[in-house]
Image (cartoon, rainbow, N blue to C red):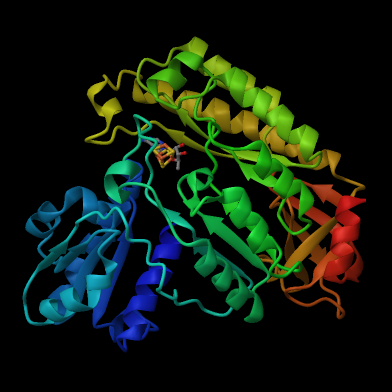
Length: 435
Ligand code: 5AD
Ligand code: SF4
């Protein structure tokens, strides 16, 4: 989400004649786009500001700005406490950035943190470098108010962009050669534009160009519709991959989190999705050590992980956020127990990912080639539909952006290794997937 917002900000600024500096010494303006989701995300920014303090001593004219959720959450106090900060601009006020920067050059400090019920930046073209993968923000904000989460306070109410402008953006990206587009929102399943829901948007995006893969994130288990599952099944280029945060395996904790679904509903949804899209894979988010979580609750989380067998998971220790409902609950799970539970969750997920990947050995998969592997130019890296990284030996006939059929020959919990079979054209991707 923040990468997408940074592209939006660069879109607004490049329209005013600003250019991206190659390195910090060339920059007149330094903007940090920040996240408040957990305390450690904010600590990273404070560390960065400490470094910038030293830099600014010798570069007094440089403007330093804080954007994003920390700007929204901490507002004036950021300017009062962090002397080097010249401007603080929240997620709904980016249109005013050029104005704030001009004032900052004149020595005035600026704060723009009003949240909007309507701002979607629908007409702004984000600044994107050439590449293979792009994000499109389809909605902003969140109305779910999970009790642990700061997002509804920092990003405001839910609002959707127009379907027409999103589809036009998919078309432009496809014409520029992008091969993978991820539709983004805090809760994409709440998307609505003139009676068109997220399933309609996904279908409309998929038919723009069959050789462009479409991904999306994030889905809330309460709102994911059967219609959406059928749309995924029907379109060969919509990836068979759903990120479906569960947060906890205990109904009591889910209730305290205000997640509005039960484990039974969640498991039924997974089963239903698997019956409609047989090869679908899932990833999730899990929080360890929410207030009052007992060892029994924790064991239920491990149990549900064993039952679902996620392909991947993002796993966190609970971090109290001021202003949220959970903040007034007692953060009573001791730090060492939170760490132990998080370790249990990570270990179990690694074991499951390893087993799932081992079972893929001998299978043929279609991957989209992204470029050289990180470790060696002799190898190429690509991704499966289910978002797994696959490494294959470099061959003269393979190019970045190609769809390639490969045969898996080895696997770790994080990476698959494969032999090249053939380069295939996009229409064949469809035949192979639905066969
Ligand atoms: N503490 C820990 N994890 C959190 N998340 C959101 N808020 C918190 C918090 N206060 C996690 C949730 C969410 C993901 C984006 O971040 O798992 O799905
Ligand atoms: Fe936060 Fe819940 Fe909204 Fe996700 S659905 S952004 S966790 S409030």
